Length: 131
Image 1 (cartoon, one colour):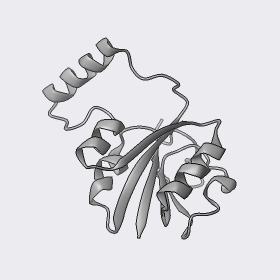
Image 2 (cartoon, rainbow, N blue to C red):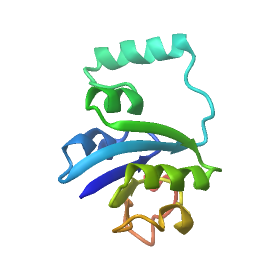
Image 3 (cartoon, rainbow, N blue to C red):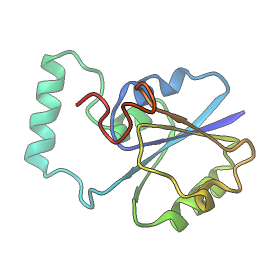
Image 4 (cartoon, rainbow, N blue to C red):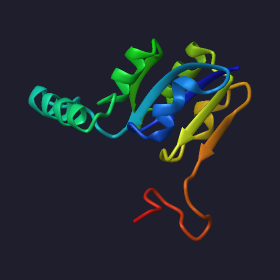
């Protein structure tokens, strides 16, 4: 089974994604940030991550190290998301803590999607259930 992760940052699910059962295909970074970090911020982030002994500083670096596909798509473009999922031929989409994914975006995915929501529902719903 070909699995695609739809993430909006470097979270525990993204860090464990290369070891998922099946065939991890790639990670789609789906968020509102339109630009990459400036070089000085990226260097500072890399340096502090190494001091903390964290292996990766970005989703892109995680994908490069594990030879996974990577693409960044803005939230306001579900049509591009649909095209990427079609091109990658994913059988299952996993979304850990992402914004709501329109049904049209993953309607062609063979086994659909699984949304991981790390809180007790319905009492603690929303974008940041630990706040």
